[in-house]
Image (cartoon, rainbow, N blue to C red; front, side, top):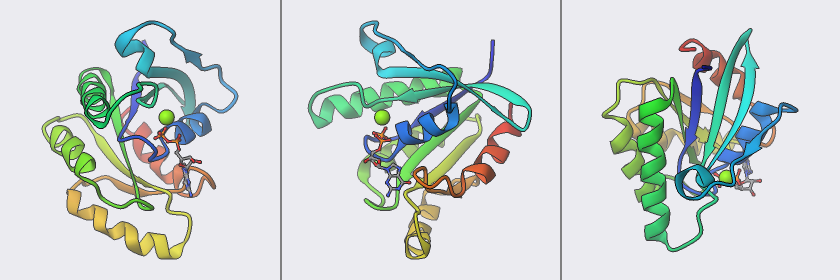
Length: 163
Ligand code: GDP
Ligand code: MG
């Protein structure tokens, strides 16, 4: 069984964009089961000679903010349970939100490695704005742009240390 790297975070931060970049041309399976599994998408990736499974979560559930929050919480619980490494994605374009804080509180309780990934850091001014996310207190904090790919290599170097 390959180690799992789970990408969690609130909707629209860029999880699926990073997922697609990580799995590249490798096949991704869209699970058409009901419930929890329908809200997860699996792929495979390789970095520095290490193979791992990537799970993209959320974004497949429709409904109100409450349903979204419950779905995100469930995906974070599953990630804490099954993942070797958790990528917790936030988004500098929107800035720090209450939902980010709620996810951070859940992830602070695990001993699993958590990489805080601040996405949409597309340029220098956004890099300055991204400093607000240090307040979440994660030792592993990475700034990247999933669209341009900048920063993804350094982040993956850190992820595969735990694979
Ligand atoms: P998800 O809901 O977390 O899976 O987010 P998506 O991957 O669907 O992305 C949400 C939106 O953010 C899309 O319009 C993406 O094109 C955009 N996006 C994702 N990554 C970046 C990035 O690094 N920079 C910018 N500017 N936009 C991004
Ligand atoms: Mg998505």
